[in-house]
Image (cartoon, rainbow over all chains, first blue to last red; front, side):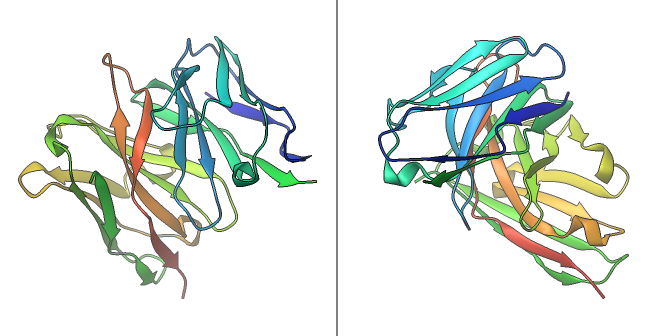
Length: 107
Length: 122
């Protein structure tokens, strides 16, 4: 299963509302997660099961979608949100894939 | 504190071997599927392998099948990745990760180690 994220990069300002999309090559129900990664650091889980917020993650992050089309939304960008974001499909233990990433930069 | 700590990375020649380790603490290691994920320099994330709680099921990405072996020792709270016949394209930071599973299907990788760098070069 291939995942295609768009856009690949994005420039935005503090306070902006930002949406990143992830499209799967076949239906994956709601088996989709979102991660944030900062340079030199391990990825951090933000959302799983397409829309469930991981404990400790700020409520400005939200996820939606099912089947093949998913979105990650940040309602009001904060300085610490500038990072690279990845979606991940976990339809089965046999094969797991990540999207190519979306780099979120300060405008 | 829930923690994963990788070790064993380094510089190895093409065709060589390396064994990575991941030490788990702060949770019941034997209750979780575990995974390895890698990230080549400047590139995205790539899932490498999964192993079931008791080691009875193991799955790999196609590019490492037949060369890499994932294993675990629940008595030592440790996860391993034996990497043989290494190639330049295996150069990456390797992360171990805990698999979140609420209903028999993987939900996410909720805990990650800090990563260990593997460089394959002559």
